[in-house]
Length: 122
Image 1 (tube, one colour):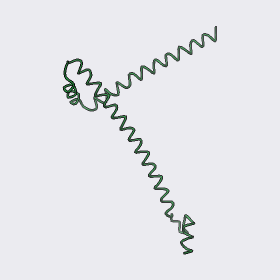
Image 2 (cartoon, one colour):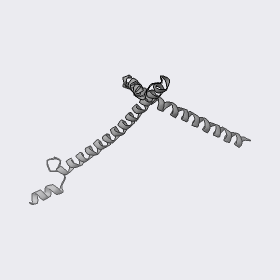
Image 3 (tube, helix red, strand yellow):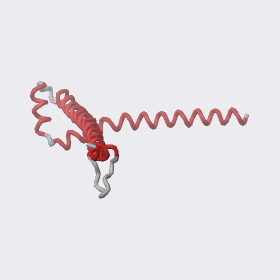
Image 4 (cartoon, one colour):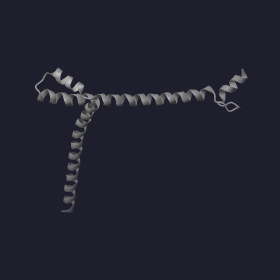
């Protein structure tokens, strides 16, 4: 009984092997790492699905308006388009508005800084 109590209180044995308490700590770290990877992959999947859906509607709406067709025929026309093209249109429809907003905000900030500089000189 005394020998097992000594082994439980000392995490390392005299021969250098690791006890079970160190192994459970390592498995907890590994489990935490796997949970982080799972959360990141879940977020990436949601972003990819959103971009794909945006690409589908980016292609469906012009077909629907240009060719005076029904929604189901426009949907079928988009389903024939390769997935990479649909995702590309989704990314393009996300990039251009954000790029325009960034440029407009930068221009506004530069104008404000220029006005403040002119006011501080004069």
